[in-house]
Image 1: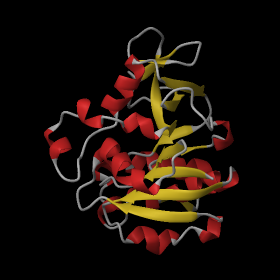
Image 2: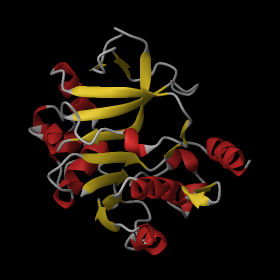
Image 3: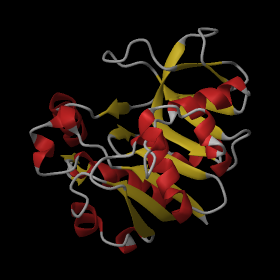
Image 4: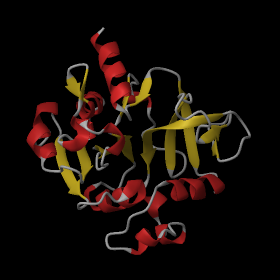
Length: 234
């Protein structure tokens, strides 16, 4: 049974005042909550177990989404406390709820028309990133991708943007303390970003990727949410 993790714990500070009373993943575009677009796509590829990490206005998620039965899946919520644990800490916090097999990871605040069935079930290394063209608000991108599908941290090829969608093995988090050096990583529970773990995997040639050229939006501001809503309604 395939598992998935949806990152939904952010404070949504750039989306204020919309997120003062509603978590960003529960904001609507095209007549659906942002997170519901992902749940539908996951259900379409027979993902039956989804973990959603929460923090800001966490009680609204089970009220809005329930136990997942409407999508034919089981949803469990991984509460991070009042302060989000960042992407690395959030994944570590959710790990006990995920199975032993590779799992899909999705940032709840992006939208795409991608068919999730094209994601690999078994990544070649410890992870596989879906890369997209750089948006105007992120012109320098994140990583480059070579012809063999390996991710690089240098400029060996034009840089692309990590979409916030990927497939990971639990082993990505092995010995995470070796690379998560922020002071918050020593707190309980630890709070740290995923990027240092990705960079370690890149250095070991254990991170692959694919370039998606279809529609993708980082719904990071009220204006981008408005534009997405208008596009979907058309």
